[in-house]
Length: 272
Image (cartoon, rainbow, N blue to C red; front, side, top):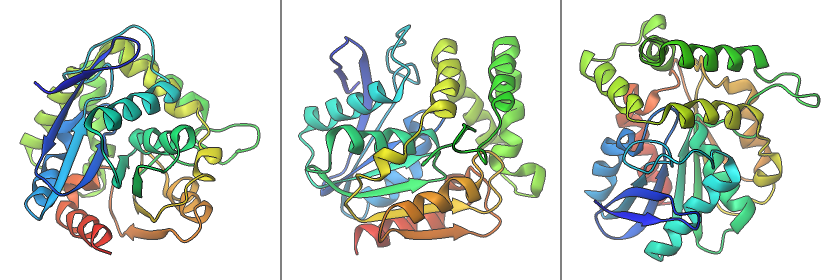
């Protein structure tokens, strides 16, 4: 397997397909880099080098006890970019992964970055706070953590309905649901729970203020997990000159339900 070791000794798995200008994908919770296989195949078949990694604690990466915070996630990405010596890389982050790539820019700048793509991302801020009362209530995240600690497998199986919008009429195959559960259960329980704290309590507004590269924001307007009005819409407003695409009727998991549309939009952004 292709891996590199971070400064704190954590082994991070990644896959590296194709050749050409690089695109680095950061996955959502509670998945791993395999969520990107259709986007990676599509872009690498069209002349791009695509890289996806498993966040620490997830997939085939190590499962340390600590380090499930966005500063560490961003530094892990920096380590991977340096390990592969990527230049002019486009960063693509989905859901909590949008926070990873935004915090990378906040901490490490854009000297190696050609563009930023935020897909259903938790940026600029997800959870409710004193100066962001429109955020998701803390009790929601407390319930997620309690559900994981009680019966993680069943909680994630149930979570798939609002994630893919099957409770709102979207259709996905039984295979997708099985794959989603299998991927999620590869992760560390500790990491899965700690990441809920990370994405619900981290403020990315200062990170987005440092974005000075072309940016594409895509969000579904039927996202039941990361509400468009308080995340994607505001992120696009905060990054000057960013391009916003709203997928009508799309759920949070639009990388599956709207895969072809997403593939075409990513390619168009890369070819701009």
